[in-house]
Image (cartoon, rainbow, N blue to C red; front, top):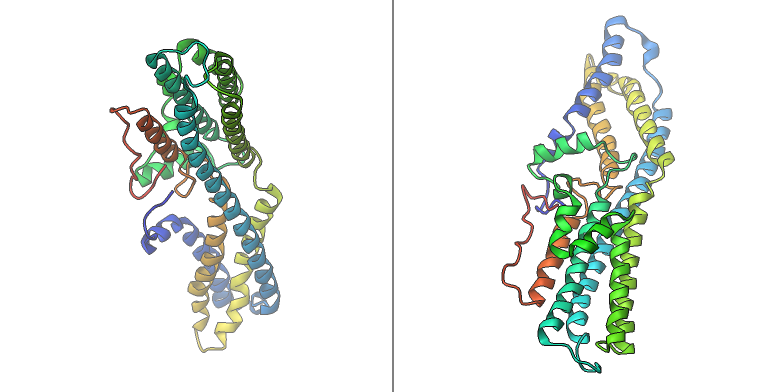
Length: 340
């Protein structure tokens, strides 16, 4: 997630420099042919291109709105996970106690239970973010995204570490091995939480009401996970994404042929002004489409994606602080104004 006030114009130009070169070539060829060969028929009427441009503008607006909805929904989902996680920490500490136990456990054992419930939740966050970082075929190629990250000077921890190493501090060996053998580690961890709560209920460390309240939190975690997986595993419909690109390039190619006649009326050799104006218009349309394209997959690790790694770290800090731990991890810093 980009956290500076705005992008500089230079950075935007750098991001689109290859596109600008393509637009310049596309605009120069028909103008040069028109001036050198005097092919009058190269000057098309303006009306057809206007109709195409209008359609493309509506299409880009639709795609960008839909892409932004996916991005903003992912941020709302993870905002809910942050709040529910803090609630889980409070409930785990306050609800699990000896108030209803027939055979009370020691304070040390009670602290161990609290730690187990909270640490397993941190392991769930870790497993979920690793699953959401897995590259899908419809996302931008891993190599091209890695090149962007290297140029921006930031990285995605899930791409350089292993899940088994990251969850090792939060689970015992037996549970870690079992979870890693499952197809969906995050789902299994919530299941284990539910089983643990059931056992605590049998021990009398939870009454019915508090047990139900904690299970309700687990349901919310499943909902947050399911919503995240829906965005991750269901792409922005490819027919809209694909055709939008076709239509924009159709408009970009037609544009110089329609502008030649307009600038010719301004005077001798004014047709050459077609090139910079075509480049400018093409750049605006194509850049808007590109913004939507890089917003539709909010978990792939791009500059403007939802910072699930940083949010997970924030939750971990808050929960471990509730356990009164002293050696807390540091918050994820923004590297070159990018929070991963």
